Image (cartoon, rainbow, N blue to C red; front, side, top):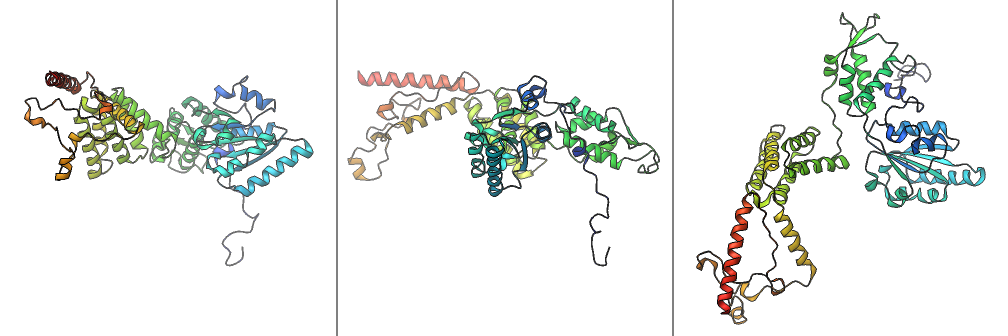
Length: 457
């Protein structure tokens, strides 16, 4: 190496080994683990790949479930021209070039092109539109891989011409099989290293991986790298290096939960929390809350959802629910996290066990529908304010009845526009405080009707 140079000349240093997860990537269906619902022998996708008769597909699933691996298996088994690129790196120029190449291959060589696009959800509408003519013409077979819901992230026209296959997170036993294979593989795995893996360790790694084979293999590789022999040495002496639960615990700082604050999993967890509280299940509700908080969700976002729930699903069946939800929001803002997690948990469990009513929500929805359905009804004259003599001369406030002048604080006066007379939006349930509210409203309606009848007489 010459003075002043920072690196050895190319070719003088041995090439660094690929990560274990890359080395252990399955090369055939015989090595592929999981996804039996779509890849078991006889399943349409497996048959289409085996017979080299694949049509455009979208592979949708969380990270580490085999989307890219499946594309590579297709590449090795097809007679078509296979092109792969990542949506992170490719632009519209590269897409158009590939489309032109595919058209030429189909026209002059009668050869299909299979185009694999990793992270297709990162392409914008214009980029996705560039695929459409060539897909329709049959020049390319598109394989798109995405971790996001294709319904939201893939153009409808492109989606309608593709079959979506959902890949599920791998189970613990499936990931254990993958880890065990890596430990036994001498060519690509860790079998040549003197490792002693304690019972239960692979299961612990698999649980931590949360369905992601890549995460599991990366953790196993890290554990193998930091493991020491019985005398505390790193294993260069050839002695067996032990991987156990204590080592895994040290290797892990914090479990990484599958979560995307702007993606589908965000809305799935919010939905699970909301519906568990609505179903009066405090155990499920606090679990989904913990999933969101521990994954790093904004606690004030959660608090806002609780405030909404308090009005939408509890309402006047327990008016304290709204106050408690607002108090939880203030507590989170005041003390911060993680101390604020108990305030959220208190609110969530309270909302879950509170009597439920959506009467307020329904009342507003129906009133809003009527407010928007026709020409805005004029405010009845007797309900209008009359601060000037002119307004009084025009009849403003004429006929207004002061409710406090009556023993039960209600009058026979109509407060809705004539077109909506007797319309009933708020219908209390028989649950919680609303049972009492319903009885009170019924008594008032009866009193009003009696007064109106007396006035008519």
